[in-house]
Image 1 (cartoon, helix red, strand yellow):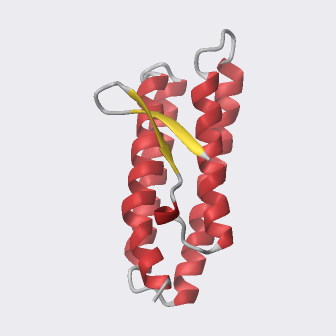
Image 2 (cartoon, one colour; image 1 turned 45 degrees about the horizontal axis):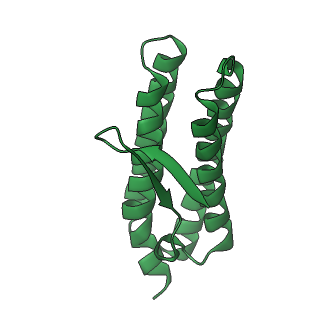
Length: 142
């Protein structure tokens, strides 16, 4: 599974869910793959004529999935005795607040789809998955 996203300099590149980013926990890995799949759909849909309604539906699906995934992941963290469960939950909350805010700005025509997508792809998916979640993966593999 790979995700296409916009790099900060505007170039397009691919990021894939590599074995290094897998937790070994089927539920979490499956959720991460679905998140990337939704991002792929968004990226592929963005330039289609008349795709506004489809993009809005995909954005809602993405937000719904993020909320569900973060809750499941937080429950798993607490159950596993993860020492950073609370700070990770705060990170999730902050990402959801910012995601909702930027989605609202996009819906109201204040923020371009490209800027919204860049945030989702780089900050929510790539940086959170590769930095924040990796610490838990290391913890659980001990």
